[in-house]
Picture 1 (tube, rainbow, N blue to C red):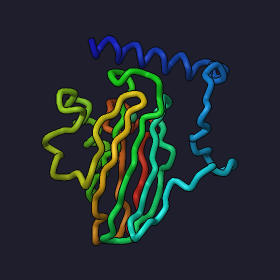
Picture 2 (picture 1 turned 30 degrees about the vertical axis):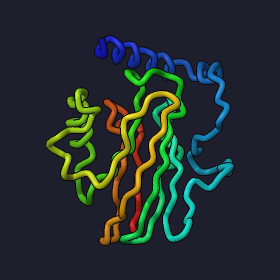
Picture 3 (picture 1 turned 135 degrees about the vertical axis):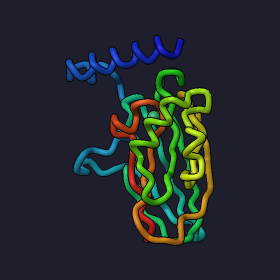
Picture 4 (picture 1 turned 45 degrees about the vertical axis):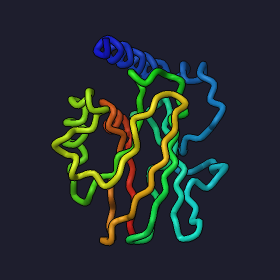
Length: 178
Ligand SMILES: [Cu+2]
């Protein structure tokens, strides 16, 4: 069943890529996608600091994009992440999560292992100890809030969606710990 959905999804994607005008048939009410070089200012700052806690508002959509692909937090500080799947497609073909990896974890290897972990919501058990923090896997309209402590070591920490192929479609980003 899932396999069939996945094939359907792939053919949908290829159709969309072949015909760029098809994008216009989808009505995007949110305009929440970040444009490549920020030519359009985002309506809201998705990152704010409230009482010393960095509050991050993230979304994932049916085009396999997060609303933000980079943000910074102070080392060792508390981070509160509100994540919402703003897409319309069913979870079986377009689920999203946000998985923050520890330093120097190979995100490509993680994603490949994750794709085989459908029964565990695409979280590979052999990588569980390499995860800094993560949300649940969300279907259309669902949201999840997590809180975690940023690492004490400054540097770049990757985050990604572990649903099959989403990392490779661009559903990834970097949290910079300063
Ligand atoms: Cu995703």
